[in-house]
Length: 120
Image 1 (spheres, helix red, strand yellow):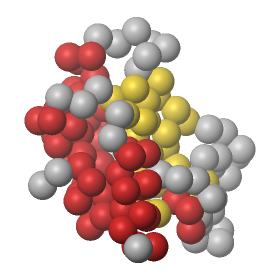
Image 2: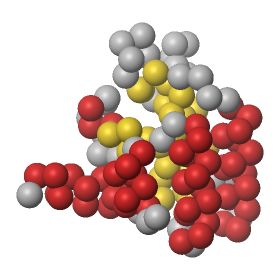
Image 3: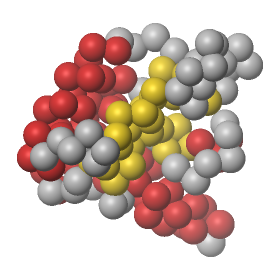
């Protein structure tokens, strides 16, 4: 399955949560996305951890107002190691009330392409 189709099938459309033009993924789908990005040779630049708020919407800040972003570019993590680092951090964080928003060369394009299909 390609990134575009994966997001269309499993992605949480952030335009419905915070107006963002991206998809987020829950735990198991985020782990699958890491593998898919590895297979397609797509570099992961960063991953934002989104928290479900009391209204049921995903947001960048948790209940304490903290934001978690794993910025692999700023951390100078070599591209070849980013997939393993992403997997271990997602696994360590757990599954409750969080989603993961990937920043890579295909995520925004997938949202835009899928939304163009829906409006056509």
